[in-house]
Amino acid sequence: MSGLDLLVLGSGVAGLSAAVRAAETHRMDVGVLTKGTLPQSTTRWAQGGVAAVLTSDPDSTDLHLADTLAAGAGLCDADAVRVLVDEGPARVHDLITLGAIFDRDAEGRLELAREGGHSLARVVHAGGAATGAEVERALVAAVERSAAAVYEHHFALDLIVEGGRCHGVVALDADGRRTEVRAANVLITTGGAGQVFAVTTNPVEATGDGIAMALRAGVAVADIEFIQFHPTALHHESMPRPLLSEALRGHGALLRDSNGERFCDELQPRDVVSRAEAAVMLEQHVDHVWLDATGLEDFDQRFPTIAAALRAAGLDPTRDWLPVAPAAHYTCGGIVTDLEGASSLDGLWVAGEAADTGVHGANRLASNSLLEGMVFGPRAVEAIERGVVGASSTGAMRAVIGSADSGAIGGLLTARPESPAPTEATDDPAKVRAVLQQAMTIGAGVTRDAASLAAADAAAVDALAVAGGDTPAHAELRSLAEVARAITTAATRREESRGAHTRADFPDTEDDLRRRIVLV
Image 1 (cartoon, rainbow, N blue to C red):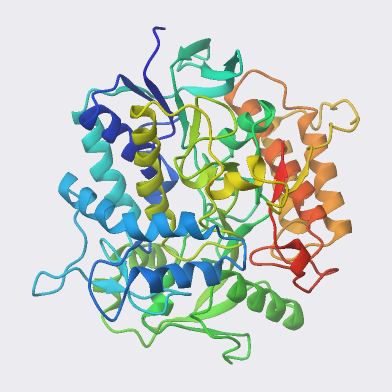
Image 2 (cartoon, rainbow, N blue to C red):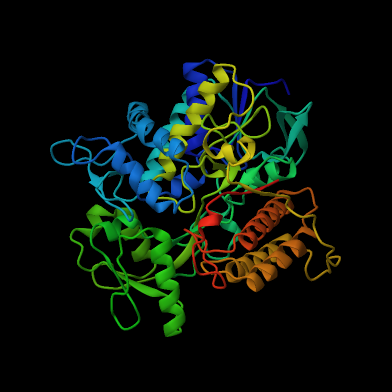
């Protein structure tokens, strides 16, 4: 295929925001490659909203910055957060201009919700708790109006690296044939890796493919040990687990243990609430706690999407306490970038959940995820338009190409240990995927220790033994296993508890570990 100016991998908020900017503002020859269909991304599952300061006092971007830094437990890059909070409001207005419809009050003003970790209400939302679907709808429509070429049902297998620069990807096309899609620049916006775990709010597509491709190409990845678990996923057999938005607690829903007692402040950051739940569940020998939303007025009108999901599960939120438990939700780390989205490989750019910009640190502040994609995807396009080549020592990239005192803990992702050849009983990628997911949930979940991480890593090694086939199922298994090994490696090295990473054998936060663990 002929070369593009920009190839976007993934069709979530970061990728589509970038594609629209590149095609409509800068008239670039743009391609969007996705393993599903264009609207099929993790973005559409986002409920709560977009956090941005769109009004004047008492809120301010400084306060939004302070809340983000507090949630990040000492590992946020302050410059990256400043970019996020300062540029975020304009990106929200851009989205409204593209046609996104957010909830408004009777006077036509944007309704603002408060979520955990936010000191004030600053979260705009759509359909009560269907913000991601509305954002995705508006962006898909904009991409379809633009000149972007769309490659649906294409699975990116590996980066094409020639002469120290990324020149595109090798992919499986819709018919399962290997093909090359070449471009002067590649932007990875493939999302996170929630499917590494058995219990997750992420769709089945969230297998960490972009992060795994980067690891195989020797591109720096950091903060990958920080997997945020959402504390209020519905305890139900469906998968992905239905998410009971943070907005419910922001409106007054309460968490209760098996005795009906409250056990934590519901508006603390997600890692704090998830740990409190895990402790109560362990102490009381139960597999879930309860979210009491019976005191919320007009539930069906405020949260129609959640109400419909609950009633489909046989629950009436106006009468029933709702069973909830932590579920893997967000990959806080990823491929290291500078403030323009440049990775450690020339020609390779990253935005959204696949990136480690330095914004989230050790734990993401609620509703900063859509905002990050909306801000940093277009920033990468602007840098490409300016002719930027190579990363600068800004944002999380300071840990890779910064000064000697940049504070990074460097290291190689160790070679795969020998693993037994697969047997007929274990060479089915779907079965091996399920075994790996369960091992990661047990060994690298809300609480970890050295022994549990070693067991999870062994399961990832076993999975790699059967991940060599050239089918999407095998490719996804390879991605999951390689990202799982990165998580266990980084989590083993981080001998402390910080943010979304809790070690039972190292329960304290250590000042000398206030630095990034960088893997290549």
